[in-house]
Image (cartoon, rainbow, N blue to C red; front, top):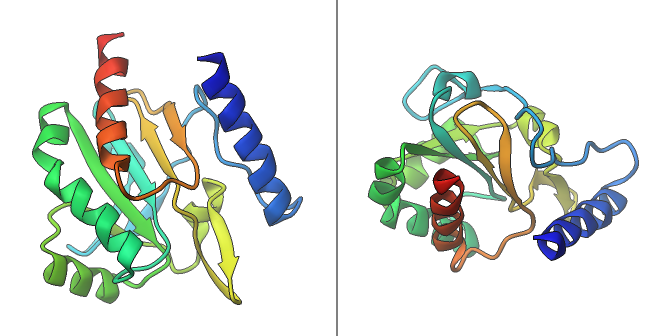
Amino acid sequence: MKKRFLGVLLSVIALSGLLGADTPTPPAVGQTAPDFSLPSVEGGLVSLKDYKGKWVVLYFYPKDFTSGCTLEAHNFERDLTQYQSQNAVILGVSADTVQSHKDFCAKEGLNFKLLADPDLKAITKYGSAIENNGVKMAARNTFLIDPEGKIARVYLRVSPAGHSEQVLKDLAVLKKG
């Protein structure tokens, strides 16, 4: 546990150094998860507070239709019923538009919510804003949020392969107490 915490802490320090002093760092385990209201593919705004009483897998990803992001989304979709059976919802967030998300969901058969954050407001609140070749986007970070709205696990710069499985394992451990 101490090694994992130290690894996360070092990742946060390294990431914040890469992004600059004025970039917020990701919220830490135990902190209240920052609320947000973002447009979804179904229309209307989705807020974190809408899911009070549920576990939330809030994952940030760089861009629709790219290989890593597609793999990550497919894995979450593959495991969706397991998340639902654990009283968990999946919310994916990127800087792409609602229309891009609609097209991505339709093409890839995704049945969980993707939220558009083109102004990077929520992405920045979660310390996940990066710049790649002059384009601002989200880093591939995930936050597991407990039913009371607290950060239960933080995953920074994750690898898409195997990530959903790890989140499911951690969720099962956390639910046991």
